[in-house]
Image (cartoon, rainbow, N blue to C red; front, side):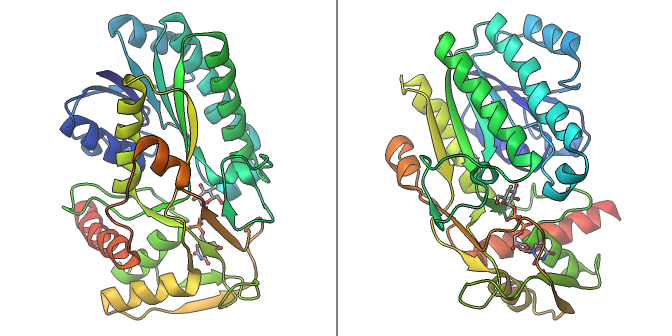
Amino acid sequence: MKVLVTGGAGYIGSHVVRQLGEAGHDIVVFDNLSTGYRWAVTCGELVVGDLADEQAIADLFSRHRFEAVLHFAANIVVPESVENPLKYYSNNTRNTLNLLKAVEDHQVPYMVFSSTAAVYGMPDETVLTEDLPLAPINPYGASKMMSERMIMDLAAASSLNYVILRYFNVAGANPDGLLGQATPEATHLIKVACECVTGKRNGMSVFGTDYDTRDGTCIRDYIHVEDLAKAHVMALDYMADGGESRVLNCGYGRGFTVREVIDVVKRKSGKDFPVQETGRRAGDPAALMADNSRIKQVLGWQPDYDDLDTIVGTALAWEKIWQDKQG
Ligand code: UFG
């Protein structure tokens, strides 16, 4: 299939591009390289451009006849979205609208959209099904919820089919050390802990130890980026086989506490580093896990890396490679 991958030079997009290439798809990556990298695009053609530029999008779609669009390009830092909400509504929501106009104009049949568990907000449940009401508590989640809705509405009014994937906590790296998370100023737990191992940071904080969980710290459903990438490739196959539009959680359905994650990073690396226990971070729900029965049933998806040691091991290996790459 001829596919457009927006944000294909970023962390998750680059892993998906590699798997799409292995599956034989013909790939065009569109990325403004704001947080992505040229080297991360390991197959297909890279077009450097921004989704705010409607002319650039029009040119792109007139040069290629895409059968599918996979839309990753977005800002993803929750606290930043609280401080600068319009950045998120511009880059995430409005630029998705710009992309959808081209999808409509060129009658692209299939779309896969990167959404997030942040659309659920602070639910009472800890294991989340896709049918829960959406109640995001920050502009990041709201910007993604609005994008979801635009895609659904366009699909209802046209022949577009979509798979919206709601990611839980994505972590880990390509097991061969080819790709990994290179985001500057990363805030995600596993990345931060790995940066303590390489010495990029001198230590880290645990945000909140008084949650109603087994050790008082927050529980999250960490999913390996290669398993997540596989879900995108399967979503394309599913739609090409005539599958109807779906919203699917992407997670393993189990969780680890912040302390458990840090312990695994220390054990796997053999390195101790200072960890300071501080107060809660605003907007953190105590526990979030995916009910993943739907993605298993609809796509036949099964994880290959559902093991925290493997997730952390690949993240650690990548962190060292990435530090060396930067000199
Ligand atoms: N944490 C720390 N110290 C750190 C970093 C994180 O204690 O230095 C804790 C957080 O407080 C939280 C847990 O580790 O309890 C996980 O935090 P992350 O920042 O790694 O991830 P989040 O759960 O906040 O965010 C993830 C996705 C978001 C998505 C959200 C949905 O990265 O895109 O889940 O809840 F919006």
